[in-house]
Amino acid sequence: MSDTLSDVLRAVRLRGAVFFAVDASAPWVTETPAAAEIAPRIIPGAEHVIDYHVVTAGSCWGGVVDEPAIYLESGDIIVFPQGDAHIMSSAPGMRGVPDVNVYRRYGEEQFPVTIRKQGGGSEHAEVICGFLGCDARPFNPLLATLPRVIHVRGQAVGDGVIAQLVRLAVAETATRRSGGECALARLSELLFVEVIRRHLATLPPEHSGWLAGLRDEYVGRALGKLHDRPAHPWSLEELAREAGMSRSTLAERFAHFLGMPPMQYLAKWRMQLAATHLSGSTIGLAELAERVGYGSEAALSRAFKRWVGVAPALWRQGKRGAATGASHAAWLPP
Image (cartoon, rainbow, N blue to C red; front, side, top):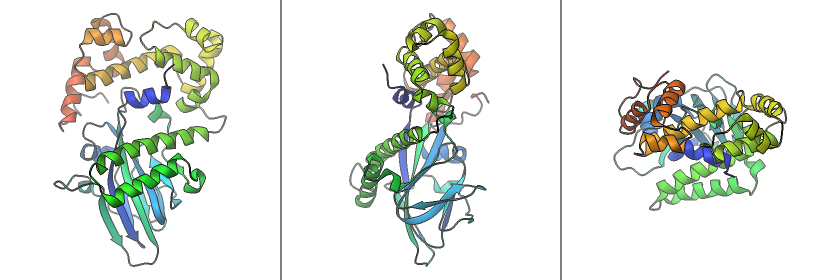
């Protein structure tokens, strides 16, 4: 059976980039605009950008604009999965001046770029700021279930995987060796996966959503089957049998966690798979239809337009334009 979380991360094209290393002394503040404003400058072609910050020395505060700030210590990670405008600062309640022009590459300067904010005070902090690009549409079940802020405490991870990844990121940032940008990008992806794993492990029992469904014995098994064989002509009866429960119980349990029936989830997931192939390959529509469970090009085109809002060819055309920096606002449905 497939690893469902990995399957989703591949399909939504998760990719990382690390842009800034902040070296600051109090008082200091940085305010990051909403991800939608800076995504084209950071990771061209990415529909959505997730911001994260790793405190590598000292302490600071971080949080969504107009929301209470969170105290962060060395080793802490704060992630903004929904791309909210947010603030990192030496004290709570501070505001900065967001500038989208900061988020562009200057000549051939190697990343991460060090930003020094010297307020003159004795309190010092060092922060690595990174970004993750992914597809948000037509269907990203992971993104839809994540909160606005995820905070992982350094003391909580101890000497585990996250702590080791943070140490590697600090070393790569300090040494700036050849291949460092690529290494940091991959490290940022690994950090995100570990943060999601920790978030999943700490969800309360009563929590619903895609991740909670993944953790549930029966719904998780059903999700695994759908992801393992998305082109299979599944029926609710067969899926329930594979999951080890009755049709009615599976339908009720699936809807409780995911907010939709299993067959609707499958239809949406097939559209995401189709969109991924359309965005990153030259596969023909007839072959693509077979891969995602539709018997013909016409059937795929009808389903894609019904679920996504545009024809497959137009989606592919728009994605190629977006990847080269062209505006795609005119062809993507609202």
